[in-house]
Length: 119
Ligand SMILES: [Zn+2]
Image 1 (cartoon, protein in one colour):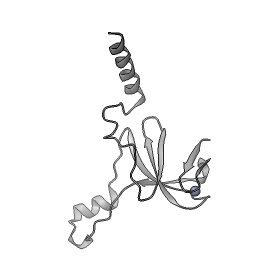
Image 2 (cartoon, helix red, strand yellow):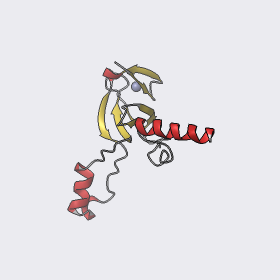
Image 3 (cartoon, rainbow, N blue to C red):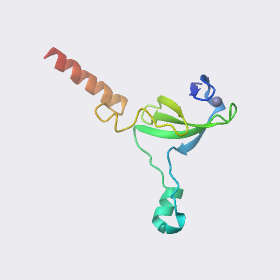
């Protein structure tokens, strides 16, 4: 059992109250009629599955029933932030490029930084 912070309720609630709804920030093409079959197929069916930082849409199904987004590290399962629909994430894979995206890499870079301090 773990807890997820609902940005609408403003409190941590048991994870059983929530359901994942897939990748966040999927934008519907403005003019579907002008899309190629490939573009429309990408929109409908294809999703990113990165190792590391991923933005997901979740719903507080047994609470306020509102949708919100979670930034999660798929390698460690750590939830880094939650934010309301329409808001931008403060943590992205790009913002973490200078840092490590997985726990193993984080340990390595920390060790390297400590060596740098000693040298
Ligand atoms: Zn809620």
